[in-house]
Image (tube, rainbow, N blue to C red; front, side):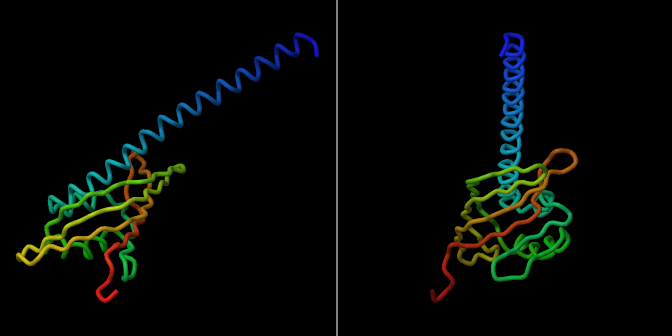
Length: 163
């Protein structure tokens, strides 16, 4: 191999490596920003519940979101999610902690997996109910670059009575 071909080959390899490194750095920066934005969703999720702010909580969902609660059919669409969850906002105050344990981003979709603990305190003064559980949520990037909850499935780790 002559020196000219070797030099061209070396320059090509160097350019390719530089491109890969810069793409990787950009992807890392995007992933970092997406991860922060998705973690912010969970912070707003918990704080809107604790504030009893159904409108703020609903703003975290896509219009065609699907909530899949345990032992119930799926709740499809933001209007139905509101209708299904309004009684809980009316009847309880909440304390909630969400621990996001994993995020993966693929284009305009991401998933988030984690655990939660919650205390549901009846507004009528009855005994609070403590729950811990897990979730798997698909989020969708919006045209403005923000993320919203698109599909959400969750369940409690608390055994059913009699188990």
